[in-house]
Length: 76
Image (cartoon, helix red, strand yellow):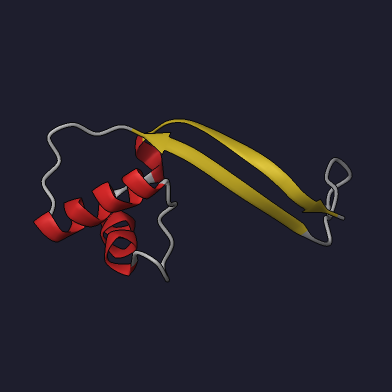
């Protein structure tokens, strides 16, 4: 470890980023599940909306983000 660095025993973060797309094509079933989630105020979680979460993991990229933020949950 160099003199100008610090070794962290544990680091846990929650990172949130926002993306925006236009002209996106998706299966109708995915669209309908997204509408349901939006209407219910639900977050997309693997156990609740597995098909949407799978579609999003294949099509939404962090590099497309407009902005992002991070919350430090643990630092020791």
